[in-house]
Image (cartoon, rainbow, N blue to C red; front, side, top):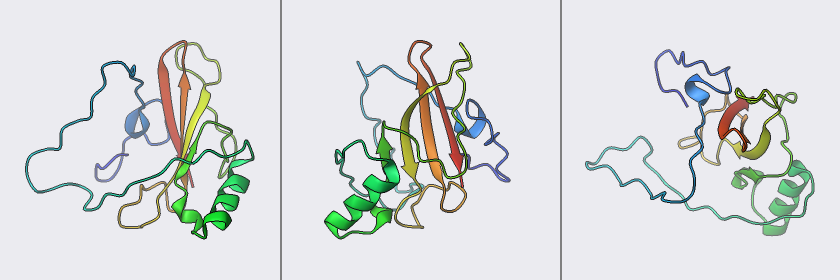
Length: 143
């Protein structure tokens, strides 16, 4: 996400600006070291858990998880794979290299705490896509 003031990072473009997504091969990846010093952009961190669900629509699976665990919907931070649950309308991007529709990878909710949540316009969702043959990535958000 773009932190420039006034935030002019081409946030409307799913393959450029503040939404640019890069794909990296798994082999050889290592976690980035924690920077030296005391200041971080987010004062809090939290652990998350990945729970497999049947191939129900995202909103339905999210509701069932919330009921089964007695926890709020905001504790569900998104989905990996499946079908996007669009806030507005289908905006599946075309690959910038081959022009075919990109494959859905993940949907991200803003987060459960306003102090540390991602800003997808206030109550929005982020959507990640990839074109495996072209090794291209894309990200967009709706609110």
